[in-house]
Length: 473
Image (tube, rainbow, N blue to C red; front, side, top):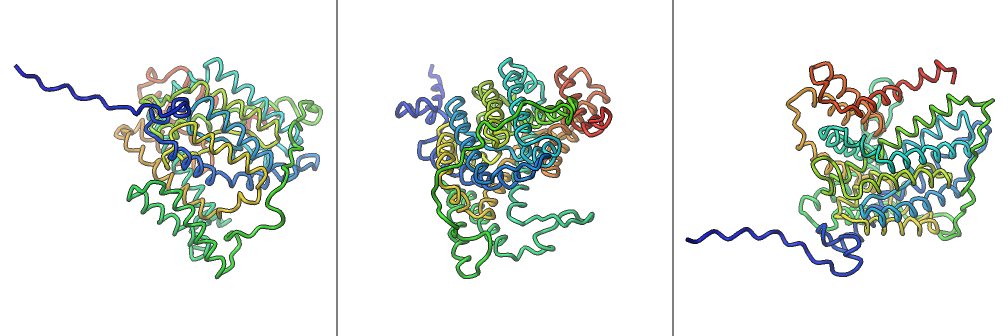
């Protein structure tokens, strides 16, 4: 009696060399060329942070002290390079690091109104030490496991919308009106006829068509093409923000004078202990959940996460992310954390830490070529973010929204992130609403005990203003 032949198991390509074997490039279905391209794309979409971070951290502190822009730019590039390479070599994951936007804004617009910049960076380092301890002891992973899979998927979708919204804002496609209604508008007074916005739209459409046609290197081609078109357009119609012009030398020795400029000697007569605790608490929650949410979303997008949202070497990833806060505080460039823009390289095909290492090396080189980080116009780079956001939105298909106990928390997670410009806010809204809706609708026993603890923490996080006022902070 004949029997049907057994199905042949899928063949995994043998590692071509030691580099391939170490980073598991062939095992993850990638190639060295794809990883290099992905690392380059990630750098291009992240390079703006070297210019933007000094602008955000330019706020004078309570004593009138400021951080030199050139030194902040060099420290930002150095920290991003070192942490990105460390993460790539340690975890072999395609996630790049740089100064977190939410945290640097919190430092600039809140913390330094009470303490000096060296003291603020000391608080960032304290926050990093706590995160490392939580990760090393496994508590951070336990909290991560307590999160329902629906919320993890919602975090992915929310980050996608957040990335897209960052792109729209950076391109000037969406602008603030400074009026109650509407608070935002399309372009300039409802018009998107400016040249910079036109370059954004053209780059977005080029990338969209190439991705639809499954062209390899679609995002990189769109970025290069958009940059060239912008430069040509700038020759005909000179416009600020387009073209290749730069002032002064494009090469120089980086100013690393901010390294080690931290101060742990807080003057408790000028700033209370409660205020310092609330600052650290806010930094901890923002750093803790922004990073976990971003890693979850990126791992899903790279097809590296399982059904629970776990991904390879997750414990090492969480520990290194905490180290990023320590290093970022120590260099006065703010906490270095995993960047959502890493999704651009993942969208280009990056699947391993080799792409991450390429990105890190480019950041180290950027220390010496700081003006060249502005080579790609922000409007062109913004198009890549929108394309990545669109790709991450596809994860919504894996969420069963037929139960309102799931629908409402998912909805709040996805919408609050871009609307408040904070991943942590979106995660908090989703967690708290999940607990309340499920507990009061007869499903309290399904809620993990640690989720209750995190929920209480987020309530305190959202209520930190009144709590500070209550204690006279």
